[in-house]
Structure formats: structure tokens, C-alpha cells
Amino acid sequence: MPLRVTDFRLPLWVAVLVAAGAGVVLDAGFPDGDVWPLAFVGIALVLVCLRGRRAGGAFLVGLVAGLSFYLVHIFWATLYLGLLPWAALSTLEALFFGGGAVLIALAYRWVPRIWPGLIGQAVVVPVVVAGLWTLREFVAGNWPYGGFAWGRMALSQSQSPFAGLVAWVGISGLSFLMVALVAALIQLALMVTLPRATRLLAGAIAVVAVLAVPAWPTSSSGTARIAGVQGNGPAGYFDEREQGDLLNSQVLAMSGLQPGDDLDLVVWPEGGSDRDPTRDAYGRYVFDAITTGYDAPLLSGVITQSDDGDTVWNSSILWDDGEVRGQYDKKHPIPFGEYVPDRSFWRPFAPDLIDLIARDYTPGTRPEAMTIGDFTAGISICFDIVDDQLVTNMMRDGAQVIIAQTNNADFGDTDENAQQLAIARLRAIETARPVVNVSTIASSRVIDARGDIVAGVQDFTAGTMVHTVDLGTGTTPAVVDSRAIELFVSFLGLALLVLSRVLIGGRRSRRRRLLTSAPWAELTTPRLAAEKPVALEDELDDPGQFDSVRRGRRR
Image (cartoon, rainbow, N blue to C red; front, side):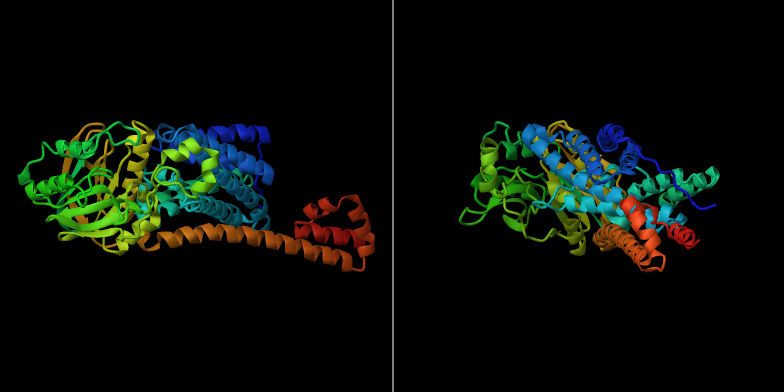
């Protein structure tokens, strides 16, 4: 019996309603919802809605699903930016979602016609669908203005059994595997000519095969004792404060830390000091007092500027022995948050909002890795943590521990804190390195190389966490190949989609030529063309149908 997959398609109005719910379900699979299986359910709902859709319907379904997801997922942006930027960013991401949905719907229409067998239906179709989903995440994560990589499917799995896979395939690779697994299970469920037991067994084998991948073994050489300080000061953009308040809050948060703690490094968060010790005498005095009193260098977030004052950076400086021993400048300042790209173009649309951002931070160019005493640390400032390439760069330069500094005071007690911490946990697993995540107000944690939280400061309180971390060695497959994996699966899906369309077009052309050139063409072509030329193409997609038509006309 030939393989047959049920031609399942929801009515468009039902698909739109399901898509609206799918986005909410997807969000519930992410922190702070922490019900990670719901991410798979959300993916399944989106894919089911796209089966059998034409381009216009698929775009509408994708747009609705994208809006319902992002409007909920990044609602925390309203606390800082307000309703207009939140809605604009959500709409932009939903447009990408809609574009990706069109490609996936085309894959469901074209790919099975070229690969109609069991392997084609159960393997090729899911691979193409997952590749196109990953391609959409890749494009949205890099464009425009550096992209917005928040909300990738893999970021929902920091506490799931699938988290360990990021050490092998990276974050984009895990997104691909998640979607491919769901798409394969859907295909199996619709293969009505296969026995139910066979389909259940195949689905179970697919799930077990993915989960059976062993955790990447971590290794270390040496340790570093690091103190992370959460000042809980008025660090928000709109918080009322006077100069020095942020620095003072950090100092007061260290009150329980004893000078004899034998530290290798003290870390303050992004924006930890509002006094630059290179330009402010009091700032220099405090920085000197800390490094001398604790006999350890201080790594602190500071706003730095060029000698002429025209260029401003969001920086992390390493202070020791009365001077800057190292500096990293944030490479991903947030568009419309820390700088306004194309200010003259955007200002007429929302002048009051644009004018709130009085100074534009310049993206940094310094290396992500920094030598601190006897070890090397990879430095990440806030949004930098979502950029796969920056993580690859710091590992390439020998980072043994990742220091992630952030200021999430503008987002208060929202899901943003939990979402960013989840990304930090995945980075620890991906790189097999401990991550010291230090915030101004919340989510200050020490994460070991397996992604487990081993120390922390209670959210929205001032305090210091001190922990001895194992300095990682070796490298993971993800660090070496994650970017290549992302590009490979993305463009593999696109290439197979294009190839399917080309082969379908070639098959139709050959059939037309045969119909018009055969001796019996006069009997077939005029009548068929006059009756229903479009239907002819659909009816003759199967070569067997062409043979039967030819035999009938010969008789």
C-alpha cells in the first residue's frame, strides 16, 4: 500500500484563532512561565495552522501568531520604552514571523510532491520546515540594526532535559532540533496508511534519540574566587538620583564582605558606577580603596568617553593599582534605548520619545576576552549575551569564565530578568564555562558549567555573592561550529525548498512538451486546455497519471 499522509487543513478562520492562542502558549514555555513543554505545544499549533495554506493565508496566520507571542513575551519593554516602541518592535518581529510562515507553508505544499515516500515525509519535510524556522530566527536576530535575537525557541529550554544539547549544536541548533522533532511527530500522526503502533514507535524513537545525547563533559584547571555585588540602587533610566548614588549603593552592598576573603576579582554590574575613576577624583578614590582593601581588581560598569567627548561607550573597566588594566565596550547598545539609529529619519515619527535618548552610545570594538591576574574572563554587557558570535569570540580568545554584567532596573519585577538569566544559563552549558551574572537589582547569580545556579543574591536587595568558580578548559562542539550549524540548517531548508519548486516546474514543463509533441497531441491538448488548464497541472503532478492519460488517448 502506498504511503498516504492525511490532507489535514484547518479553515482559515479557525487557523487564525488557533495561531492567536499559539503565541500565548509559546510564551508560557519560556521563563518566567517555566513550563518548558508548552514551547513544543506552541510550535505544534503554529505548524498545524500552516498546513495546506497558500501564501496569503500563511502570512496572516504567522503574523497573528507572531503578534500574540511577542506582545506577551516582551511586554516588559513597556515599563522602560512605553507602549509605542513595544508595539512597533512586536510588529516588526511578527512580520518576520509571517514571512517565515509563508516559506513553511510552501514547504508543506512542495516538498512532499518531490519526496513523497516515507523518508521524504518523515525526514525531509521536518528538516526543511525546521531549517526555514531557524532561517527566520537568524534573519530576525541580525537585521535591522543588529537584530533582536530574543525569543528564539531554544531559549525556552534552560531548565529542560534538552538544555544539554546546546553544548553540541548551539542555541540555533537546538531551535532547529525542537522544530524538526515537532514537525516529524506531526507528519507521523498524519501517516494514516502506517499502523498506529509503527507511528508511535517511530515517534518515541525520535524523542529518545534526541534526549539520549550525553551531556558534554566539563573540565577545568584552577579556580578563581569572585565576588559579585548587587547594589540595588536607583539605576533605572528614569530613576531620581544624584551623581554618586550608584557608586555609593555598590559600596554599601559590600558591607558584609570581609577584606580577608582572599578574592581574585570584585565585579560590579553594568552601570555600577556613575563616577568614572579616570575623570573623577572621588571615583578614583573609591576604586583605589576597594582594590587596595580587598587586594583584588575591580571590574565595574562605567560610562566612558573619548578625549574630545564626542564618542561615548557603555564600558566595563578593570581597575587595579590605580589605573585601568583592561576595558571592554558594549558591542550591542540597544537601538532606540541606548542610541537612535538614523535619528534624523525616525525623529519626526515620535519626537518626544526620540529626544528622551539624549546621548548615543557607540558600539565597541575591543576584544570580548580580558586577562585578569592568572585567568582570562569573557566579558558580556547586558544584551551582548544574546549574540552567538560574541560568545564564540571570547571562547576563541581563551575565556575560562564568563562575566555577564547587566542593568535591568528599567524592567523592574518583570519576565525580562528571568529570560536574561535563562540565556546566561544556556551560555554556561554551551561553552562549558561558569557564568557570573551580576545585575544592579535582580538575577545576580553564579552559574556553574552545567548550567546550575550555585550562588546568588536575593532579588531587589543589596548584597554580595562570593563563590569560587572552576576555570573551564577545552572547548565544546557548539563553540567551534554553532555559527556554521546555524547557517547550514537555515540555508539547507531554503535550498531544499527552492529545489522542490524548480523540480516541480521542470516536471510540468516536461509533461507539457510531451503532451504537445506526441502524435496524439491533437486529441488531448485542445480539449484539456480549453476545459481547465490550471487543473491540468495539478492533475498531472503524478507521473502515473500522465501514463494513464496517454494510454487512454491511444485507445
